Length: 347
Image (tube, rainbow, N blue to C red; front, side, top):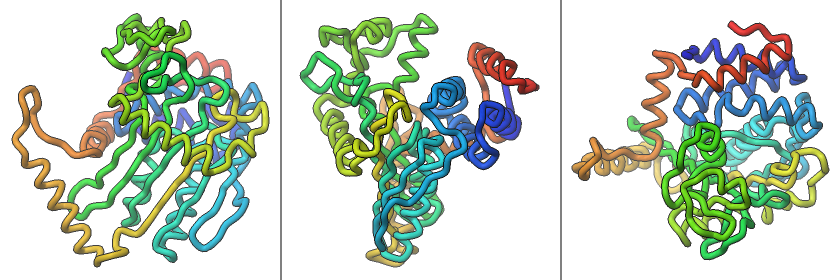
């Protein structure tokens, strides 16, 4: 099934409004989900729509709420998402950080009381578009349902705890890093199980802490493994400290809002001007030179070229804008059934 970005956006916004969202929130979430699909990060796209509708029905997500600023200073703020869609609160928080950084040079904004904020890369791309460096650290997902094992452990205690960094460039593509601190996202484990597929080695372990490629073992008490062994584990803890502990998100937990995964989550967003220590033209020139130098390295056996983070997403976005977004038939079937149950016409 192929859908244009506009078709998918209209469908998504209509479905969300039928589920109870107001137009402002529905449009923002549609923008975020379709944007993820456009750049090839399908794990953070319209796949999540059934889960959001379920969360609305369970009272975990308040679809017409709007974020508020709880406290702020010249270079910092804390934003409460109001338990609406996380994409709404996260955009407000990052825009606030960028506005403050434009004046102060650097700013940090924390976000609490937010549901799933989606693809973190979106927010650091926003920073890069304003000639700023953006960093996002998220944690607090494991307070009720831990799914990630610490390095050397055999019991889940943490979560996927993602992070993202975005660096503006000149003529070259902005450099964007966006990844979970586990070897795989949770969506990929769910999809592998539903499709009867095995996972790559080193991604999950069974309930005894033994590495396995069988996704079924994950749901029998197993868990994610950190990427890169002790190094990924260290970043996982850093995301937990910055996302949950530093932001104080536990203080703002309100059952049943957020549900078992998002009730305690917190996100730290940092932005600073790329021209703090040199003219922007010099920063951009040096960044472009670095990217060009890295891409010029001869590819190793089995590789066609050397890329920098953000290249694949930029290329995929260009292709899908032109040729449309592929939606797996099984997913489109689920979305069509959901739409029909909400009285939304499926085109």
